[in-house]
Image (cartoon, rainbow, N blue to C red):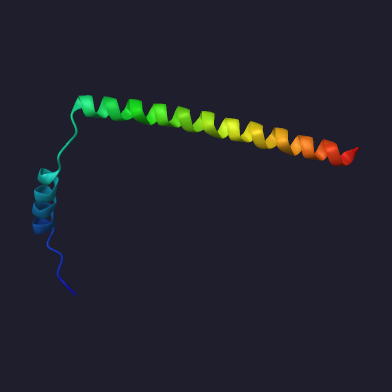
Length: 66
């Protein structure tokens, strides 16, 4: 088993963090807006699918319950 060297570990962590490319403020804002838009589109889609299924199921149940 390898011996844990905390100093070497911290140096490696700092080296890896320095390789990270952080997004610009504009990129963060644009991707956040896109997430909200896609969440809204998805909510509308599933709402419409739910209404369609509910209407169809209600119609089928009403047809066979008479």
